[in-house]
Length: 137
Image (tube, rainbow, N blue to C red; front, side):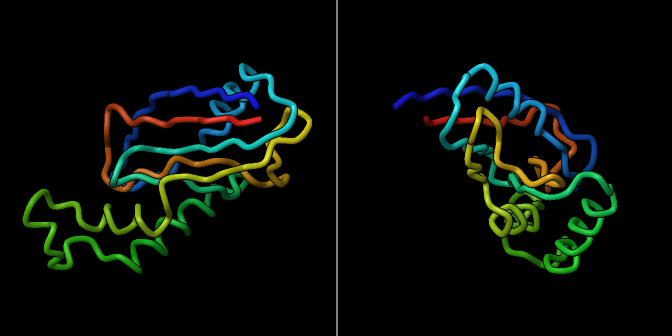
């Protein structure tokens, strides 16, 4: 059994934003040179998340963020807002989750033809966000 891990940094430019990180995940997979296994993509931020979704139509990302905005209203008298005014970001992050695990087969991620990996920032813009790619074969 082999294990490989790579961390990369990114920055966000909007308060709520999806950033396609598939290329960075694929670069880590190429470095790992793993023919078969599991790839976990994780973010260690309490106001961010990782998801898999479509990227061919940018409206999907907008619809995703709009749905979350309707489900979790910003500044809705959340108790945590008294501390740093970002309770909605924490709730959205918990709903989406901090990681995804994707099977690896033939040295490639087993994503569908329309699927990509996204970093979700719910408390941006931020100058530095971390994503950790862990590969197990």
